[in-house]
Image (cartoon, rainbow, N blue to C red; front, side, top):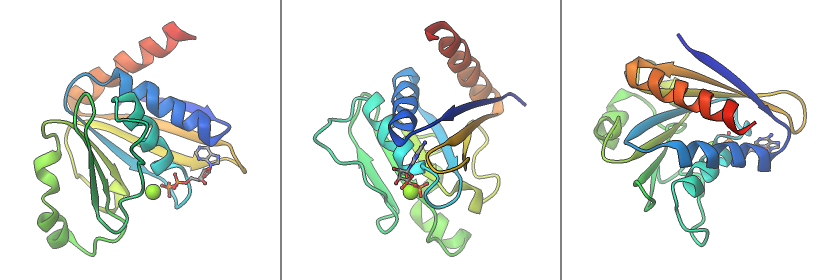
Length: 160
Ligand code: ADP
Ligand code: MG
């Protein structure tokens, strides 16, 4: 399994990483986001949205209560938060399966609440490392996830 780690020292830097990731995504994809409350999952999603070309005028906020927010970018962005889902029945009701992948980019906060959610994509874990420091660990899931992760890694090396 391919794994990659990048550390950030501010919310802005996590957003910039997300924005870069969003710019790199050229086809429907699934990004699972895990980590404690306040780790930076929504913060990274805000960056991904910008990278996908979602207008700056459109606020990207946590879908904690709405469960899913949708944004129009270069590819549609579907932002989920599974924190409040009680069980797999509710997951089914939400119809998440149709987006894994669908016609756009699905970003799923608290994906780890439902193991084996998807067979292909990226699993990103954000961990606290002190006040403003976070470690972002990216794992590939499936062959498509591996390809995307390798493309990300080599582009990242190239830009440094
Ligand atoms: P989550 O969605 O994981 O619950 P949020 O993205 O809503 O978390 O909140 C993350 C909080 O942590 C924000 O208040 C943000 O300003 C702060 N923060 C501090 N440092 C970082 C960092 N390096 N990366 C992301 N967020 C950070
Ligand atoms: Mg959140």
